[in-house]
Length: 157
Length: 319
Image (cartoon, rainbow over all chains, first blue to last red; front, side, top):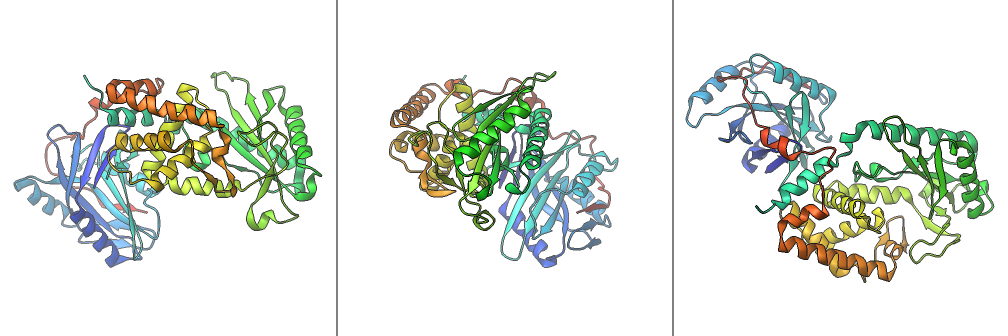
């Protein structure tokens, strides 16, 4: 799947395999929310972001309307991916909205702003994927935290 | 250098996003709410809740044409005739707003164009009075009759019964416009209409775009999809039927005369030919809103890193 952010001219790519993995993990926890972090890479010209995989949290709390991702073990796993070839880096977050549209809530917007401004995060513009899903279908919404705004990508294919 | 047509169209769409004229949008919403409250105060139990049926409600709005349509549904016994209803609502709005707006009778609506404010902003709201067909029936099916004040395509002036269902019209367009491709092409056609002073009503363009997507297998990038819709209009508009989702007996295609349909077909033909000859010509038909340019700035945007090294994202709560 390819997304384009017309407002700022940046693209986001995510393979069907990764999307399927997110759906699978999301459905395991349905009807509660669930999520994780996204790892991938940027293109040489830094105009494209490619999602390569997800890392699922070792600890989390969730309910039908909230998901709290813990950080236990994430730094270690991200260090390993950073050292491997090709290098993969943290590029953002994903979580599900069970039986609901993939639009960011006020909590989601606040969370992404905090992540972008966190000293432990080395990227300036984290991606947010929201997977609106039920037991039979899903809708994927993609967003980018860019210069203090959460901007929606538009799907290209 | 040749123009990247899809990139240009993306920029055109982006520059026409209503969020880029938030102050003007807010003024329209405020004024619409004010008119709605005034109508409710004046007519009380004689009417049902007025509602917005314009492009903003249908998610197909652009920021260079900000018409808000406010449907005012009246009960059957509120007026003896539709003409009486139309004139009464006009007279009420004229009395209340003529000091601050031009109030004029239009085809089925009463147009209010407020004088420019200190920011140079002009707010336009069209009030569409309608009356339920039978006493209390509106609550069940949302059908109303409109009064046709002046000729609407082939529908004659003074027609007493233009039955329609604005809520069904809104949901039909809104549901189709959830598909990004349809929404983009509707907006581009509206931008073309406004920038080139063309005739078709927005509702006509919405329905013919939806029909093009229904009838043709439209794929590819933004330009490929727009081109397919333009070709569909070129080939089909002279004979097409566009049943009103609010009343299948109304053919929205009838809002254009045969000559106007022929002109629209020719417009599409010439536009396609000229863009085919030279991709730069797309900029003649679909212009970036100069108040909100995007191309230069886009070149500078990147996925930046604050520093090299491994991220350690904090624990985070989502909702």
